[in-house]
Image 1 (cartoon, rainbow, N blue to C red):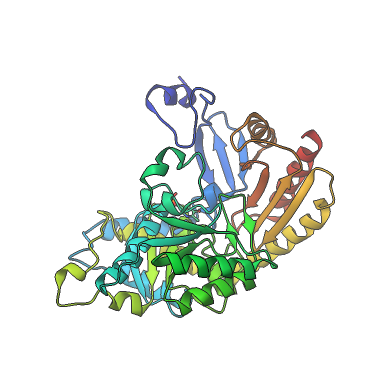
Image 2: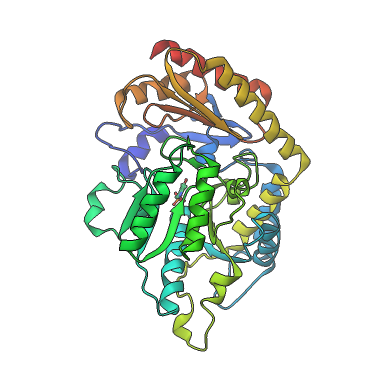
Length: 421
Ligand SMILES: *Cc1c(COP(=O)(O)O)cnc(C)c1O
């Protein structure tokens, strides 16, 4: 029996309606930008497996560091112990994070990084004896699938069935360059009626919403207002972190820095599941007390797993290297040229790019998980490229090590697809 057939017996996949989509593609190997399926077909991973393996799959430099760490120290609890990989990672990460980030808290995935960030914000005020229970979030944001993260995400098939169980969130539109006056008025009104603990946002690019890019100036004015009202600002950089936007973090584009930052996905270079919630010294100090109960009693068993830390350290070494930085600049320029090439195509409604992120919206109506979307996915796979359309959006987020030739192939299949929709 093939893997594809054996899969159907016991497995339940995420984000699938198994009655309509019984098949999963069986991948047996990944190296660099290439995925190989069980029939030996090869595909360029043009979305870096959900933007994780930015230095390429099975990167020799990273796998070697991870293999060495496995021989030395596999895992210890992080509530009583510390270890070199966690200490080293905190040192390396605070060097590249926005300068106000001083404390590193470990989680195990993007959703729990958000969950911890929200709990930090709520308890920060609880510890001060101030009750603040509402969050502000952008419309159509995505922050993960646990309950807190679902609450601050825009309503969709992901969280619809759980709507009655979510915490209180007020939503504002994303800034588009002309609407920030209205957004600020709306924020001020919310601030009069609710006790707001924090504002959570995907800085500059909303990933799951279809790689929607918003205005840095407008975001800055929202952040400035939040700071003036002691509304804690939480940047969810789970998708945008580690070079995607052309800078180490999307928050680097704004002068006003967030109080808390959520990191995952590319953090461990696509090897292992780990996440981090970083924060300022002030947030951390808000939990210091002679009273035990004011500590942060939130923990995941695999917190700061040394092997995952080793992958993250190796990833940061590559990210900060001149070779990867020049690759990011090369991909950024290539995306800009591709955008010029396709933006006036009658099937293209909108196109945009920032760093290694590129997206275009098709000028056709389609459902997020509808049949045209499935046809497009198959069209790309048949031509050896893995691209995963989100509704009518086709986006690219390639590993930084992609060659110019491979990237040109990705562009070409998208241009070909424009002729069939
Ligand atoms: C993927 C993602 C999450 C959730 O991370 P998981 O590891 O899938 O739980 C949260 N926020 C953003 C912006 C993401 O892209």
